[in-house]
Length: 118
Image (tube, rainbow, N blue to C red; front, side, top):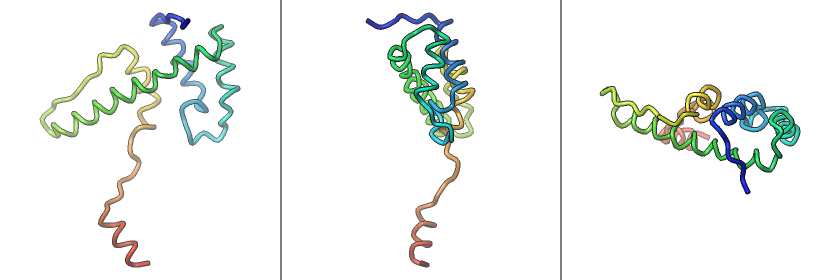
């Protein structure tokens, strides 16, 4: 049986999750995932297996984040912006936004040119 999480407990989980980049940042050099889960489990007094189920919060964030980006792109300059009403969105966006934002754009035309030059 799964644990029922209150909003307060979920925000605490998000704070602890944020403090453990090994769990959400694939570029983190200190990628000691088990240690990170154990620290959160000790802090919340919840088994790691239950915490890992709560990690689906990433998926919920990505869904809202992608929808927000898509609607902003569709409406361009018309000021139509999707504002997620999911209670945990802002807390998650504070540290995950950069993980789901494109850092560079590669034009397919540039790829073709660079392949033919080589």
